[in-house]
Image (cartoon, rainbow, N blue to C red; front, side, top):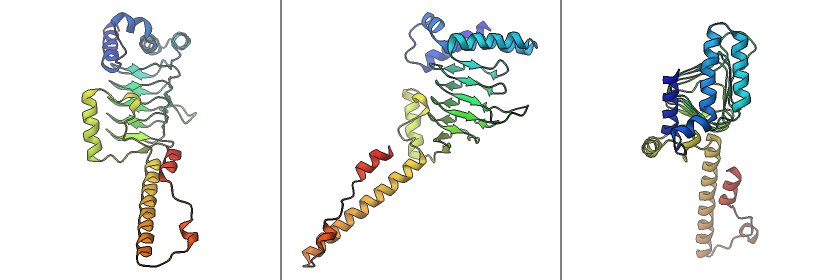
Length: 251
């Protein structure tokens, strides 16, 4: 257990630039405290000391603001940043090198017995406030953006954003950009500059097209006037299209 604790503390230094010393991480990081207490509660759960396991988890929640059911399975080098409001259900499975930010819920969608919570494979990152619901699998290396609501599986290496969550169609350029960003440091809260909601991207595309149409129409009217064709004043006085204003509304 203490060997795992050392690994968990090293994982904090790898993923949190604010970490300054071993003693600071050990005494001031609620994610470390919650994980240590969960390992105790999970062992008690395995020994079928269910009430004691639940009481240990209850004390952990009171002290850290992080609720982890003692039945949840958690792998090595798990990191919960900030931690407040994190909820992890009984049948959740978390593999190695997973990162969760504050407000994340790994919840269920059914009252039936059996597997009803998500599985997070190696290297998954879940952004702040995201909800991952049901017995789905978030495959290795996938990312879930902040405040996303995920109810369907996410493929390996993919990024899911929005409510309901959608898989981003990442171009080769964005993959190269992300690879370069990873060399400089991880993407905080699982969201990069090119990871907008797909619906917002579609609306921005429509706005760009409308702006180009407006530009061409203005050019056509100018050319007609140069040829001596007088246009109706009402046409020229029509409301001007302002794509920048609309883009701010979409953002």
